[in-house]
Image 1: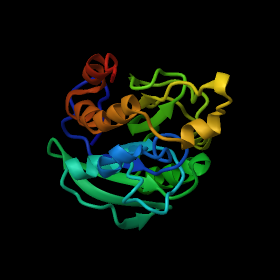
Image 2 (image 1 turned 90 degrees about the vertical axis):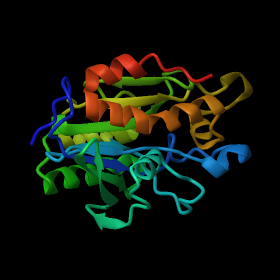
Image 3 (image 1 turned 135 degrees about the horizontal axis):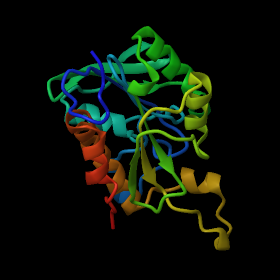
Length: 231
């Protein structure tokens, strides 16, 4: 069974992976948003397929929910509880296709260890990997889907590319915007600080973007979601 990133998603099994830390997963929601909170995503596509979003583990996942948890909820999977390959994971279906959702339990900048082990365990080729991560180079509230490319400045993505020795796989980026340098805010404080409403809205849209990508193909998902801009 193989994943066709340019055509329909029929016949693919998907592994969706996620863990939480710097980036969406580690950013705390503002008080009024915590009840519906969501923070980073890692997804993995396997032959089976694997979808991943790198981040640091958080102690209170009821408070610091990540996007892959929202996807699991959307799919009726409940909380991810099984453990394997330095990750927690669960099995579900998207459009009749088997999927594996995983959240690496390493620190964000070591996410590649978990992703590489899971892909090896399920014999997943690099082109069946989808990484979801936050991007400070994108305006807050934007979603950007790409078929392949460099790791950019995200340390979790860099580790995945480094350990896989390959960057030819799709990714979904969620815009964070830039820290307020004029008022002395540095990047670490920015990504660990409260998530603004635009970024939060974009993160909530990620599960739908993942389903679109797997069911209708990456070209369709790019057309639909690369124009997404939360207010």
